[in-house]
Length: 193
Image 1 (cartoon, one colour):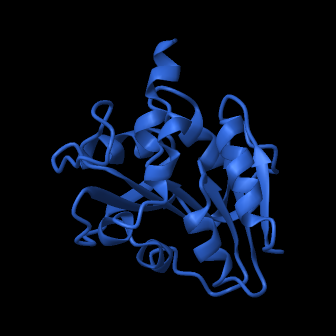
Image 2: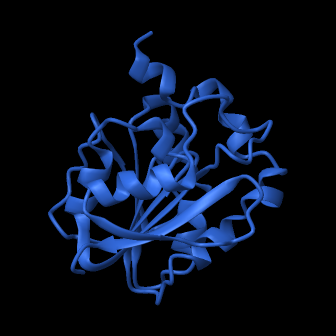
């Protein structure tokens, strides 16, 4: 197994993503609230499997849509089945963090528990390319200072590290105090956006 593969989520642990206790520490509706949706946006859920938050966002987009992307074929299969009945959710497979969509075509980007998996890769640069000038990036990830039994055991970030990595990719980000017990939250925009 390569170093990159060792950082990626193991699909065998997928049931943890749907476990009922997740609602206690990372409620989907609370995350979607942070996207500041008006109902017409195009939202990219980056690393979307299993689709919980994609579905919660789609429910708030009567005239918008969610594009859910992931690179794990196993997770994409589960994701596709789960969102199939929902007309405003599209699933796209990505490879090497490349999302086959146009520049500045996305109004909101959601990256939950992804940043620690893509460190040193081009994922943030790709998100920057995709985000519209007035768009919003929302990063929610495990905080190294607040470990959880449910979270990964390594590769975690401190809030400040994540801010620096987002800034290096061209985002102006701010830390948002949400009271989530194990996660930091960053909200950002393109520099000059």
